[in-house]
Amino acid sequence: MQFHMISNGPKPVAPFSHAVEHDGIVHITGQMPDSPEAPGVLPEGIEAQTRNVMANLELVLSGLGLGWGDVMMARVYLTEFKRDYAAMNDLYASYFPADRRPARTCVGVTGLAYDALIEIDLVARRPGSGGAR
Image (cartoon, rainbow, N blue to C red; front, side):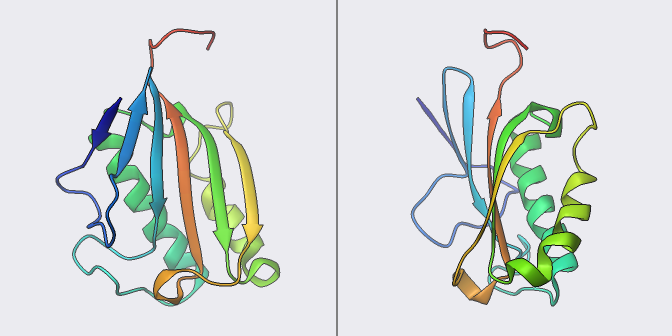
């Protein structure tokens, strides 16, 4: 098992790794909508927060030599599910190749750190790690 910290990735605010990998399967820690330059400072609105979350996830993916097409599963957590789902979903979909959209769970939650509106975690597969593609 490998524990990954991405040097230019989001700054962890708790004791966790950016990702943990085992047998080519990579579990990426849930990312918040802050930026690496301003930990804990969130932009306003679901669109801006979704963009920041996706940018943070992209930093981790690219730091591991992976891309959006390698993502197998995403879990999305929204504090204002009914209000924010459609706007989040439109932005989220734009990051994935149309023929490589991962499985996904999207749930409403009562609260997230920093009063964020969204958090997303991923499971990805390293290309060439065996099994069918």
